[in-house]
Image 1: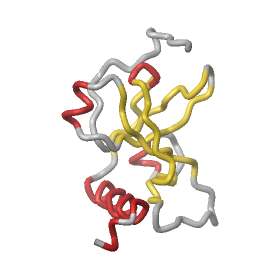
Image 2: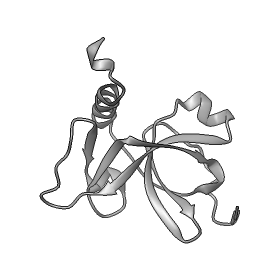
Image 3: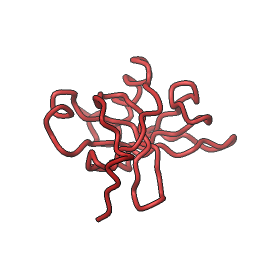
Image 4: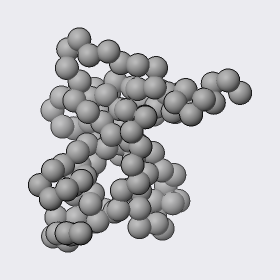
Length: 121
């Protein structure tokens, strides 16, 4: 596996942060950090959900959340896909792009509960 430590993000990683992550060499994806902050401080990996670009007319399902471009920081609106959750090595987080608002984070948790079947509890 290839790591370019000069590109690696070295700041704090917090739940609700939006990052670019280098999935493969020269292939970057946008992800939302889901993992608890205490774990973010101590583990070499971070649990994230994929955020894909939103195109007008795209359907946003109950286990997805629409996130505005102002929160994402990547210039376009996005759909947080809570059925695509990754464990990402911290070395592959290359740039923090934004932070979502608490209201959006609550929507993410609600959609995650739907995805995991917790709405039945």
